[in-house]
Length: 56
Length: 153
Image (cartoon, rainbow over all chains, first blue to last red; front, top):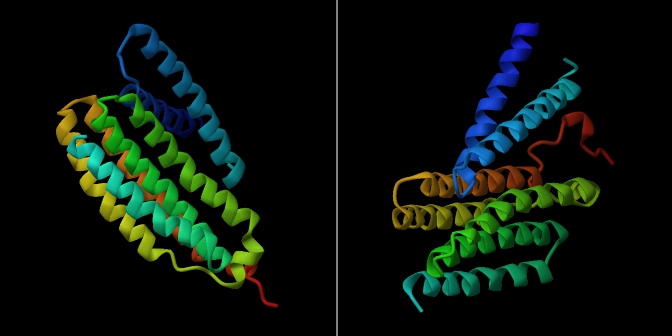
């Protein structure tokens, strides 16, 4: 259960980070850090939303 | 005026005239479909203007429209569910037209932008636009209504 949760979070984290890096105009370290942080927030929100809809 | 701006002007006039006509006349479902088509037209015009004026920032406007346009249509579909459920509207033609216009605009913009992250961003915008149109048109035609939620009166 915990393993699938972490895997789901990682998939969201990687995909959202990739989307962020594609959409920004300039690649700078600060932008990358901000993107990774926002992607983590988005991943947690996505997993929480999926759990809220499906029950688990 | 370069070719990009000429194409944007033609698309703006040729696209928004039927949108205004569709929004101002006809049934409620037809009006919702027309406003959804309007966001697609303006999104594509923004992509062309970004190339015409050489301002990549306009692509961000297209990205926002590609996301929020279908979302706005879904909000309409939710709030007007009772009225729209009585007469599901056919939204296939505007969806096909929007997709058929999106493909050449995105390909031409990608060729002009060259290989790189900018081209990937344009492809993301195009995919979001087409996917949003398909989802919103299917929603408006009642494809996602559960049989238990259907009206029986």
